[in-house]
Image (cartoon, one colour):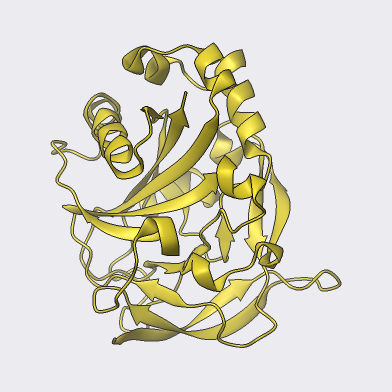
Length: 270
């Protein structure tokens, strides 16, 4: 297994600390590692070609790519339904619109325990557009009554193969539930959406967290990673996959900048 690079990742401090804790870690080359797949390690590189040809066209992304990702998520998880209701673009242009659309250089996962209640409420009260429900032939009541909710996210590089702030993922098998700490997010990127995200504290044992990145990701590849699962929450097991942007030491900042798209598929067992 090769090393991608040595990088500094920004962790949350312990309960009594303030600020962030810059921690130097080895980031391994995920292409050469024998990884077990998203069910075990939390993330997985997937070959997937989209029919979208112009990624600046938000309408085409919603009309074409949302159903593509829903189908991919159903196939990967075995869920009866997968809902994609929005997407996030990160690029210099998007970052100028809102600072939270810059690469996030904090070790985190997107959702804290209890997020399924927020999801059920958001589909019920119309916070989320109901297009995904209509497209999949279900109602807010179906989301409300789902016996299991799993969020599988998809990250795709749309720019040059080498970028200044690529994304790294931590093997969920090396993470304990107690490593996470919830913190509130209000009006994320101007969307009006409030939720609790999950920051991650550095492990007491140096090197316990195992970090991976995939060099030179192409637009016909996506990385799928789990950020929520009601079944794992109920069993007090690690339901999240820590991830963070990091500085590639071989690429000067902005030369080139990262351009990427993220989608979240809410997978339902009815």
